[in-house]
Length: 86
Image 1 (cartoon, helix red, strand yellow):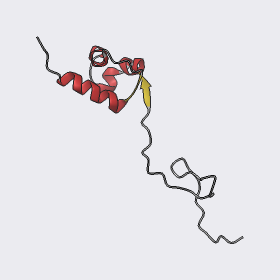
Image 2 (spheres, one colour; image 1 turned 90 degrees about the vertical axis):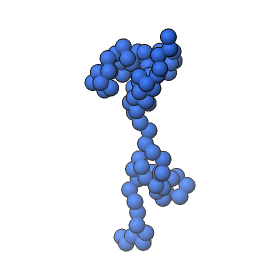
Image 3 (cartoon, helix red, strand yellow; image 1 turned 45 degrees about the horizontal axis):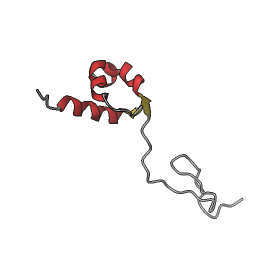
Image 4 (cartoon, helix red, strand yellow; image 1 turned 45 degrees about the vertical axis):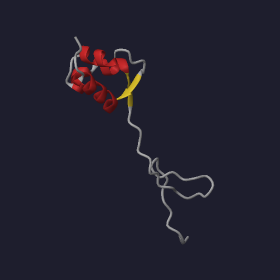
């Protein structure tokens, strides 16, 4: 059997469309893994090199339950750089 066109193997990054049967290269970035607030608080020192209390302070008033590591790193950084008002 002779191949006339180069066929590609479908993968998560290169799925096959149902209409054409050909693959499309996705330009979307893969989503970051998200963790629960409690998991991140429990692992604060290992992941962010801060105490649990700092993460709790950074998340105070935030109702979101799931965060990516980069998202929470940014939140912690903003919290630590805030000016203290007397």
